[in-house]
Image 1 (tube, helix red, strand yellow):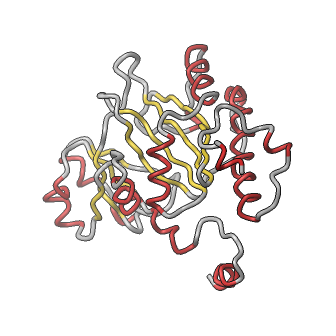
Image 2 (cartoon, one colour):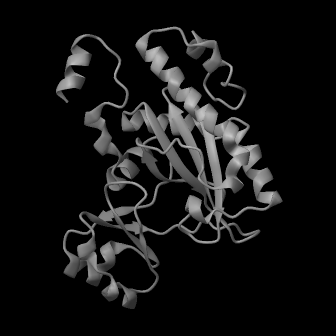
Length: 255
C-alpha cells in the first residue's frame, strides 16, 4: 500500500488498485457485477452454522458451499437437505452458500465455461472449456473435433459479451481481470466470478494446444495496457498480435 501510494503521489500508473482487490470476493463481486445487469448466483454468508442447517439461508436445493475469498478452490454441491449434515463447515475460513444455476446444454448435457480477459478498455476471449460435471475445470477438459471447433470459433472472434463485461470490470474498479461465465437454459449470461490473479500460462494439456494463439493474445492485451499506463509506445510486436478477436481496440484505444 505504501508503494502504491507513492506511485500515485508521483502520478505513476497503477494496475489493479490494491484497495479494490477485495471487490472480487464471491459475495461482494457478485453484488457489484449485478449493477450493469449481469446475472450472478445469489451468495449468502454462513455466519451461524447451526441456524444455516435449519433455514439453508433461504436457498433452494441443490446449493453450493464455497469459500468466499480466493479462486480455484473446491466447492461442495449439496443436493438435498439431508445431505447438509455431512458437510464439515469448519474446513472453510469464510463459508458462503451459493445458488446453484444449471447451465448444462440441452443438446449434449455438457457444462461450458467461457473466459474473457479484460485489460483496461480492451478484452479478448481466452478459452471455452467443456466438462460433463457442473464444476468445470481445465484438467477435466473434454475434447473432440466438434468441441475444438466450437472453442476455436469462440477464441478467434470478439467476445459477444465484451460491453457488459467491461461494465462489470468498471463496477469492480479493476484494470486486469478474468471473467468466467456460462449461459443458462434461456441463453442468458451467468458470471461465476471475476479473478484479478488469473492464470495466463499456456494450458498444461496438450489437447488444448489449438488455443495457443489466444493465449498469446492474452499476453499481448495485458502488455498493451502496461505500455499505455506507462505512457510509452506500444511495440509493433505487441500490436501485431492484437487482431480482430480483440474487442475495444478502436481509434481511441489505439491512440
